[in-house]
Image 1 (cartoon, helix red, strand yellow):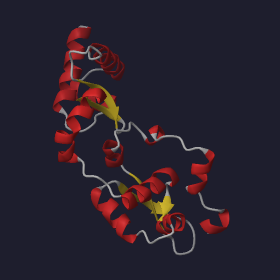
Image 2 (spheres, rainbow, N blue to C red):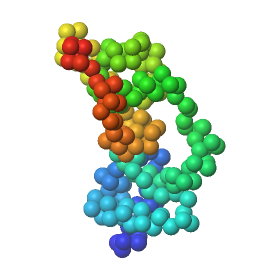
Image 3 (cartoon, rainbow, N blue to C red):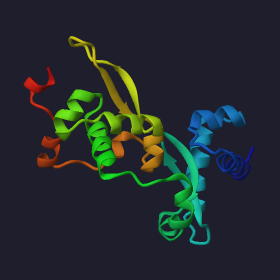
Length: 183
């Protein structure tokens, strides 16, 4: 199969998939080797750099999607963004930020950082699928620990948790507890 045909096939898969898909998934669907899929994805990225295209392949939640270019999304998000995104309250964003930067983290640790009860926000974020239970902490009482989900990555248009903005030293101290508080 020639590179043009391979690239077209990979592009068609991205167009048809509604969720991010990784190279392995594309390989499984197309029967192409993962290295060939990676090459085709790179070719697609180059082809869609042209201003005539309103969308391009982009990494999201550990996979690839076809998405509107960032410059165009700013003009379109008021109409199209409302379908999938509802604004999160300041309290929800604070709780989510603590979880994202401190994961895995227990409810008690979140409350110690925020200084208020996190019950309502935790239920809300769990229901939205932005956080999940990731295990139990090995301390007396075995409290549940929480972390972010792939839905969190998609919501914030991140390829991985490593793409979160870096915190400076002062901000980082806000998201950490003294060893005495961690139990």
